[in-house]
Image 1 (cartoon, rainbow, N blue to C red):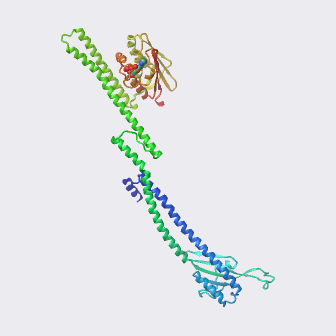
Image 2 (cartoon, rainbow, N blue to C red; image 1 turned 90 degrees about the vertical axis):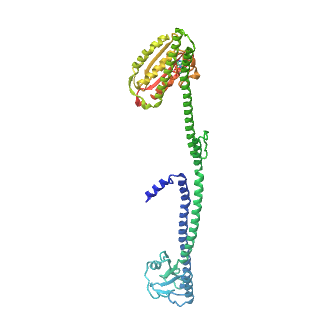
Image 3 (cartoon, rainbow, N blue to C red; image 1 turned 135 degrees about the vertical axis):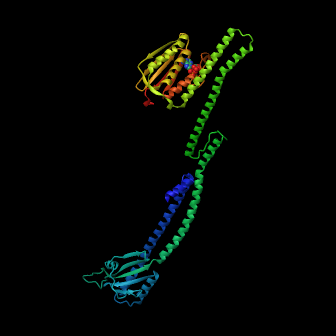
Length: 493
Ligand code: ADP
């Protein structure tokens, strides 16, 4: 049954609604204490009313018990005064009074039923020993009270055994009083409390409804604001500072939007840059081809020269496209790393061998310093990209007779590749930007020497995929040092 209700609530989504939960909590917090209060007050009233009734009756009985001794009623029950007093008492409390003498015989019963009979009950015997008793019988609706009839020995009755002032129990007064009036009052009170309870329930219901609505409002505002952003009406940061919690949600949402916007901007910028970069060689090719076509009898040397230029531009276009493909591949994910144990010293030597002809052409001397043998768990192709790009840049942006020094070193966790050159250097303000796609310190110079502006972006991505770091230090006109630090083992990644 409970499971069924749960399933229905789940379907209705009510059980998951914060508003409904708040409503239930507020309602129960207002309603449950009122029930306890009602029950508590009524019970307290009943026991208090019974205590008061017992104490009233006991006071009356004590007075009459004294009269009984004074009028010697236990020996002679003819006293009309006492008879009237007893009658009045039993009428007043709607009860029955029995007077029992020392031999447990009933000498007076206001109902006249038990006179002459002997009563042996625990209460009467207890009372004979001088103890008052009072018992409430809730089921039958009466209270039974006993008090002893005590004679105080006077001076003229005093004997040796019973000196003056001795208290002797001469009999017992037993009264049964009805609790009907108390029960009736309780019923009235109960009815009133019930009405009050219903009014309170209605009030707490209304208050809970309104409070839940008010408390939930900031969340409604958030979802409205998010919808507006989603629909594209606004891209302003949203603000719902009502609660700390809403502020946190909104802050997280705003930073997510800002991040997405930055990503979108950078993508747009990238697309614009790519288009521009790809267009430049094509435009050159077109200009060169058009100028050849425009002339009638083009000398063979000029034709050859123009064709060489066209071939160079096509080569450049090809380089850009290849770099872009490499970058896109690296952008995918770290899962694409093809890890194997690579001897970094050997790999570096192979790459330097490949690059030496370019270095020679530029009159640059390349040296390798291997401080120790390095075996690292890396992706060999991506590691080659890192080394090639750094050493190629060090050669390209060097001066005549310049030097490039590649130093390999390692500790127990990381290996480092340091590539220092004696080249043109990088201005301080550009040091942070050189890793951006298509960023070049000197665009025309870079173009001249065949740069695409993508080399360091590729390098940095490859380093980051290995959970490594790359840093550059440079002094303009003196040279640049790049330091790449990569974990030796995949476990450390
Ligand atoms: P590019 O293909 O133009 O070389 P990179 O991304 O490899 O593109 O480098 C970005 C820019 O950083 C270069 O255009 C160059 O201005 C600067 N740069 C990179 N390496 C060096 C270096 N070793 N010395 C001086 N400048 C460098």
